[in-house]
Length: 417
Image 1 (cartoon, rainbow, N blue to C red):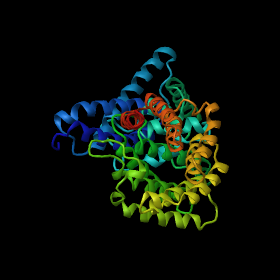
Image 2: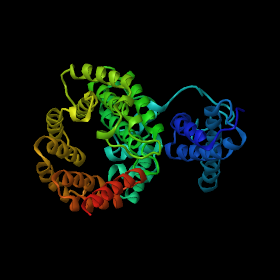
Image 3: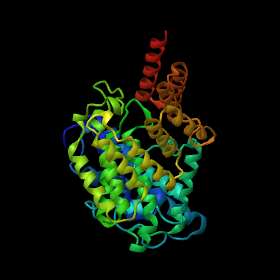
Image 4: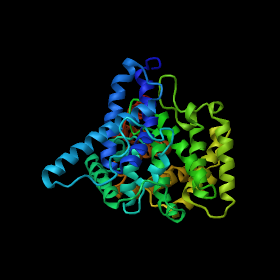
């Protein structure tokens, strides 16, 4: 055993190992839903034991072994039930290797698990939700927030996805090259959502969840190693790096949110900016421009500005106009409106976001109210801006975002009093 771990350190290790352990157990026992339950039990056992007794020398092997024993118990129970009900033995081969043996414990099956969760028998939303749960380690509530749907709806979607994986009988292995392309869209969307949840958490006391953004970048690198010539894979990795480069400047010592215009740009990670820019340049040279490449290009324009006032807003607006043609995402429309306001004035931005008031995907979202408040402030309507800053604060579950919005409302209230 190693030294005892603080709870936070133990949680970080468990989150990093969870998808690797799940991949190993699924490969061994061929039952996704049961394997996930077994891994969750192993993770719970580790969360209780490791902070108290110390982390084992081989934490991944420990988790695989505990989960495998749970699976063995499960299959033995199932076998007994089947024998009682129909006297039919377990299907041959389901229970070989012995539970005390940990085969191929050093093999990382995370990428294989990714492609399995994105099986074409599943709808795209279900595949993304399942992968976020199994590989990304997000809670059902976090996934629901990312999809802008109720938590109960997301829980049902994940359950149906697990049943779909079981019914498909898909083998646990990387798909053939032609099929990889079919699943790639879902894989990239999953990575994008995991990174976004890490970069700006949908709820809780921390603005950022570093373990999620790091995992998304790691997995994006893995996908790119598998598909080095795909321009959108490179574009997504570039987007992550160019965005993550600003992470250190986004919060103050007390964890408070610092908006882009007020950040200390000397804290931006120049190595990530250089790597992301190089990736983007190579991807754009391939001639086929996708949505992730466009978003990366927008991030690169932000990163190029030495000062906030140096930001090339006309170029950002032009890129968002191209992106709008490719995507029906309301967040793209919202960001396009901000860029339009910076180029043509706040009235133009306010005009563009009116269409979102009738879009059920975003009509009650705090970001719509926050942007409207910002544009109203730019237009000089401070009282209306205060109203929408406060409304946005009531609609976010992120404490740093809520505090920032309330601070903005208080600042304007003082100025008008």
